[in-house]
Length: 440
Image 1 (tube, one colour):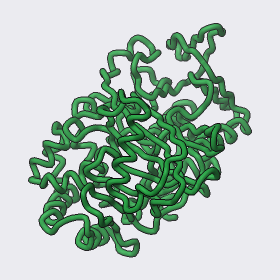
Image 2 (cartoon, one colour):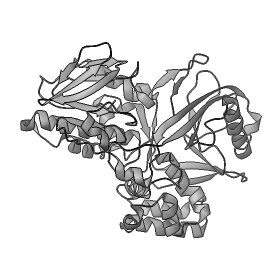
Image 3 (tube, one colour):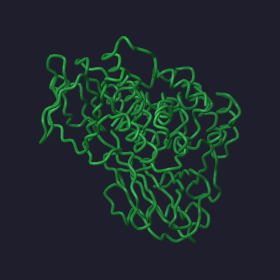
Image 4 (tube, helix red, strand yellow):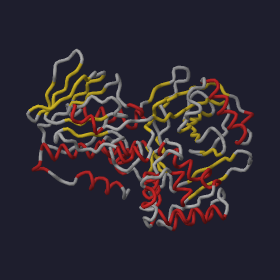
């Protein structure tokens, strides 16, 4: 479900059909009954480069629920090494000087790795990488630019997995180049991480529902739509056990577009999809073992760990593995054993802590596999039916399937239909709002 602030004349009424019984999709939260702690369905990172998401949060009055780093600062543990490492970009320097100094002073990379990373960064910065990236996977692009395997393991692969949820031997190199350019070469603030101070439901979903219901728009949950078709310039929506409804315009949004309920003439534009899982696990510990808001793990099954607030115990940590195809069919007990073994083998004194409770959440179809072929085949927002547009994170925007991509597509779709319905009120609202948010 994509929601956007749309300054339009008062006669506009919006109806939101949601197939689930509750809003939120993959960004929902729930309360763990045994501890009373709020858990997210999965770990989602936000970044300062998420201009459309920041505008969305400001619109629904939820921006105060995120806290920004002063500069990118990530701690790492490498399997077999006792000393933790850190990658930190100075907050006070403009790009690309902050990136250059951060890479030079980082203790996680050897000198030859820093040189190779700098060579690749220059190719991205000056657009040279684009001519090679279009039809390549990330692994092929790294080979093209002679990136050392150790550098790929420490820096590039975690970034690919964390942003695209696709293995490097399958992930679109063009999308990865776009990610690197956006985060590191447009604004020195864009690489900063944003940490929610509330559950994703309280941050992204509940305020939006409140915002729309207060303006007398309609939500229909558990909506089983069976058919959508266009006739004489109107959009007809048929639902199971409900009367057919007629609308002036429609935004169709889905998490995957697999088996979409769309007019027949639009179905050939939908690509065939593969999916990639994400494994999340929450561990309640009897003592605090991690002291930073984000910790990366290299050479282990576990990839990222985030401490979370808890009223139940000393520390609650959220563990995440992207593209976890090798773990998804294991039992919850086996996954917890693997994660805890990785933590104890890397974090000093972790083995003195005890797990009081655990919760595993598997998203077997968390995102689509963003291969080079799929990147070319992603559907575009506009369709052959002018008053029916597409949203959702799969719609082509040169970005991966993230919160920012979904919000951006939702806002652009809303703007397109606003222009269709009220051409006399056209204005560049979303661009001005997004640029304004970048100056905070």
